[in-house]
Image (cartoon, rainbow, N blue to C red; front, side):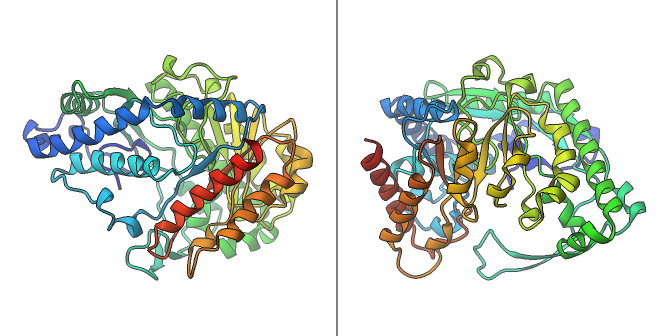
Length: 445
């Protein structure tokens, strides 16, 4: 978990005392010359790559796709199993200070993706310094038993303990406490500016969107199987729990507004479970690195656990409540791993919907009939092909060709994600990235 650099990783971090706010003692953030030299060299590479002509070409590709004027499908690869790639010399961390190591890890991974051609990646000619935000979460955290099949795996099997079992328990869900530490933010930004002086720009930014998914949270405290039964046996209880969560999330949204934490995500950052957010209907991101109006941002939602739930129950127990959040945004992305091809009429109810997730369990041709001219299809090839054995390039190529064939006439993006393993053979990813580019270029020029 990031201590310094990733605002989103601070969720669940309760501030122990207001005395913990403010600048750290100076001796805790002394970065020696060896660490500085490593970081500056990596930043020089980032600066060099960020100014290549292909970066502007990629921006145009993403914007055209999100504007429903696709030139050719852009490709994005993320949620990579980095621990399996850690033996690569280009990814091995050499800095010693924890702050420097976080910067180094971010830079090495970003450069690695570019150097191995991981899709239509965009490197920006700056490094972000996020606001320091303490967000207590919703007052109750999961209690879970886990099983690891691989000590390096980031994806594990989980069994959740049921912590919310009845109406009285719902009160355990609390609105989060939010604190913005401007002094600590300034300290980190000043340190980064000092490290990277005359090499690359440092930009202080807020939260470029939030992952709003009520059921990703609720199943962790209500249980998966029990919740599925309760949709029928205790519907009032389930609806009350979802409403409570959403009410608390709206408190979080408003506090972010009041503190100026929101930042434009109409830029080279991921939105929802898809690719980059470049789109013409939202303001220039440089106008709002903080204090952004949510109507000039992308929002997102999903209900992954409802993969096998009917459209009527999806609406009753999730989407009707999610709408309170989604209607606050000028553009929306919906979905993640759940199939949605048979729920497109539900999607039409979402205000300012621009993009719909099309996981490997979707029927792309069925969804395409509804999405054409209306929504971007965020198409996701299966990552299972990387798990064991030899990588079958021909099968991977046919999958990409199938997606393109069945979505003809639509704006699509191809998103390779949820890569829990490559069987310790990173060359599988390199080869997929190459064949994806070759296949798309062969069909679109």
